[in-house]
Image (cartoon, rainbow, N blue to C red; front, side, top):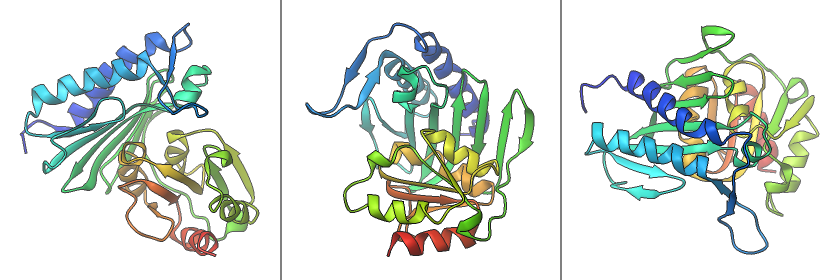
Amino acid sequence: MSAVDIEAFVHDLARLSGEAILPFFRSAIGVDNKAAPGSFDPVTEGDRAGEAVMRQMIKRTFPAHGIVGEEYGAENEEAEHVWVLDPIDGTRAFIAGIPVWGTLIGLAKGGAPAFGMMHQPFTREKFWGDGAKAHYSGPAGDRLLRVRPCETLAAATIMTTSPKLFGTSEKPRFDALESQCRTYRYGADCYAYCMVAAGQVDLVVEAGLKPYDIMALIPIVEGAGGIVTSWDGGSAASGGRILAAGDKRVHEQAMAVLNG
């Protein structure tokens, strides 16, 4: 591994990608659809510009590292160190002008999440962690992130990007879990996981995620004292069905409901 300060390097990646992306936010940008006819998976020039600048910097600084990105695919993904990038997580929010999207910058070592940052350049907020500690910087100042205690589902705030994104076998299980929670919110994408780390939210439940949707967020939630797994308690690093919680007690209860 290079002697480059990884944390400082990721902050530089965040700054440069933010500079590339922000000119496209709340502008008359064109939106392309990556999905098959009848579906909608949007991508913008902001997505492409943000990922391109990060890839260039990574290749220049760490030529032996791999990169997996949402827009430009995988390069050298068998490397010991692999950067996992999502330039705009929450593209639907981005094109609607709602600032709950973020740039996800993850670093995996040996396939396991090692460092992650969520950067929201419009609100000037950063959430980052290494699995042992997690940090926030932004208009509210700088601070360590800590999850909050939540003993039961009846006391929990649960979030998901949209219930419509669950499959036919997943939706009833999510509904059963949501019905046992105190309150719910939808539509925050990566921001929801950062709110778990910040002690504002107790549960995030999603399905159909890709590695670049979650890899950067795992070290943030875990660094704040939370837990991120698949619905059955396995590793979340590959994406799929994800359950994140601030309190291990409510995580266990949620997992029991999701698994029937």
